[in-house]
Amino acid sequence: MTVTTARALAARIAETACIRDAFTLADGQALDSYFDEYRLAADPQLLHDVADAMTALVPEDADVLAGIELGGVPLAIALSAATGLPAAFLRRLPKRYGSQRQIEGTSVEGRRVVLVDDVVRSGGQLLAMTRILRITGAPVTDALCVLERPLGGRLLLHQHGVTLHPLLTEADLPAIGAAS
Image (cartoon, rainbow, N blue to C red; front, side):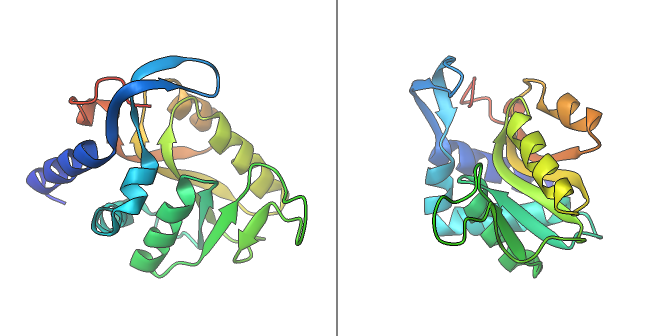
């Protein structure tokens, strides 16, 4: 992707999914603006273009793309369609009824899994999912996201053998300031 194309995509993402409004994170931290991944996922052309741009981030030896509930799921589906790689879907907790699975979609056991999420902040959620996948026998060494916030996630993941590959960093979206 050229610099001009990357800037244009970042501008489209900011226009569509960067919201200036009060927002409270799960940990109670309050923000005055945030990244609304659902607006990105609801725009079919933008989702397609983001997935196309993210294909360059997928390691060549990847076997499965695993989207994290809920924001990573539409991204994993779009990226799966763009790359031809199968997808799996990760729940934070096992389903309480039906299959009672925590991992849905394609089998991950013994396959090189790349995690896919919308925003990475502290990295805690990606690390938790990495641990679950590794317990099932799936090697995980890479994670992709649309937006990385500089809140320690990259370092935490690195300490556990996972390399983070963001499409954009918070600095790429100056119009939003403090994106979630």
